[in-house]
Length: 123
Image (cartoon, rainbow, N blue to C red; front, side, top):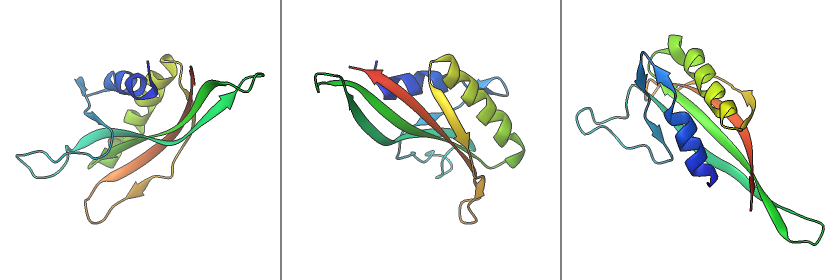
């Protein structure tokens, strides 16, 4: 299973108010009814991928640095959702490293919190 499937599956288990949150890899589509993204959603993207070589100089693993982002219009749920996302990632064998900084976009009204994570994929 590649990193994208693993992250989509893990983040697909994140719940808020009993419902699964939408999970995207960029770009995030607008809702046809509202003309903007959902009120709360998760995004993940690969920031870096690096092959590691074994003793015979053959690629043995890919080290993925992946950013996970929570976007919400309501800042009171930001940390709770990120905590749930972190728990699901860890349960899937993904190392979570650090979170932040929390940001606000005046133009869109979304609060945003990134999480940095790492997953080593064996080839």
